[in-house]
Length: 241
Image (cartoon, one colour):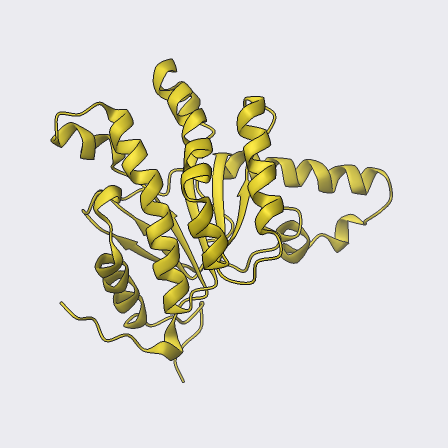
């Protein structure tokens, strides 16, 4: 189906929960790792599609603070997967002018992964296209708790007064402080949960859920989601005039 999109109503910031990689592999009698690999390289395709639509920010939930509970072999694979992704997609990333940044905890990453993250961020820091944010070892509870600790420390040191703490101050202490609020949240694979993802940032986001598994989520599915978004009535707590 050809979805006619209104170029004046393109969301600025789209966040995605990349769900269904394991089920995609299981349906094909493949190991779960095959699904994770297929899903990782789909990020590149959808990021380019987002940029072509005029979307400025794409944020992806890749590995949560709870994902450490998965089988050790799978965790080990997931720790190596971003390295392979950065290496294979390097030329596409450079040519597409996409800026890549990683948010979340970094103290639990293997050194090889941490070095790869630092390298890709450095190589793309001056890119002016889409900002692709990968959430690795990320959880919203952890993010907000960290922000509150930082603010409390500033209060103790006299750098800020309690009465000066506003939503804007909290926002500026989050991992996403350089990103605008999320306009559209997409979750694939038919699940209807937020899963501890960007809880502060999605306060007034539109949600879009699809049964399509992430490795099968393509440009047409993206256009379908944007089309649905454009036909929503966003009031932000107010009323239409």
